[in-house]
Image (cartoon, rainbow, N blue to C red):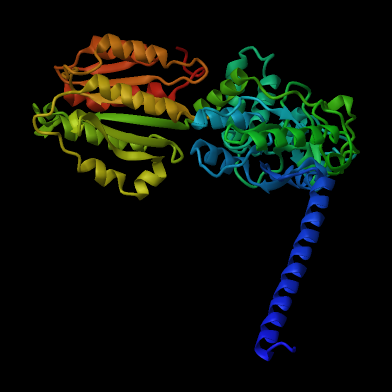
Length: 527
């Protein structure tokens, strides 16, 4: 008996559907087997990414070596070239999307970034390459000076060519140059004075200049002539630093990549890029005009923190480059009229402060807080001018902003808590290569009974001291209500000084006396 046509069609449809499902299942099984075979071949369930941010000169080498990571090692490396200034700033801001690894030119960047706020950044890393700091000049300049075919000394270049020195707070080659200058002047009758004089001479050099500090690697890349230091000048050491934000998996993968790099330091990409090994071994011939041998130009290690801080403080003093946190009293007593002037204490103080802006270099940074009692909610202090360079402050109308400041009616003097807050802020934002200082302008003594108190303030200030990072308080007190002993103790606890007068008419004299002390740094001014 034949099947009903409609029923036959339904059976045929079911057969087609089942057949299609069987084909899909077979394909899926085959795909699973293929994927399983591939994963089994690489041994990886997942591939761990490692994000590396490196100085632009070494980033191409790291990128080339990242391509050699075996697939079976189950990690991949992505290298981004970024100037170390930008990376340090990002780390100081503690951005959430930063790299797993940082490779700057020099370990000095690690110290600088830590000082800037990246407190959990390691102080050291594993060097993966090195390059001596040299003085770079062109072939033409070398020939004109009579140096063709040989490598001149630093003394030769300093005596015969204008040498341009970049900001050492932003260029590790300049730090090396300062340390080299210190070595050259160490046998002078007064080494400190001779060093300061050399710094002032170099800082006065403007473009065009014919020589400048640079790495040997960059000299090779640009086919320039290198003048090598005699000894004691730190090299670029290219520290490989795994950052605290890296995940456990990325950290493990980053350490495997580091081992790969260290296995390649004497061959291949590093040699082709003009780098030396971490120990200073020369990996190729020097370029145009350079005849120094490997033994004659071995780089020193990175500078000690003490050595780096020392030369940068000398640079700051010689260049009068400062970072000044000002704390200005706006308590009610500042509205008092000064006899014989017809003007208030506040008006005279603001006039002196405004004129004082012109004494600093345009690159000096200054920020200003006001203080009284409960000026900002429960806080006795409030920011008026954020920290900016003098030129930026003037462009933003700082003079008009200052002139508009008025005393707080009935406000008392919340001195202790305000000084501590300003000092903590200045300590956290302390910068290398600048004279860092807190200036307190007041007409009275502490009147806040709920404050930390003088013993507590002195104890905290003592705790916050760091000999490598001086941060003095300069106290400026005017008027009959000043407690000169109080201000003197506070300043002395930080290595600073206080300047007071009971006569508010002498505010300008006292203010300029304080600024002269601030801007006259050892050894020119002995303490």
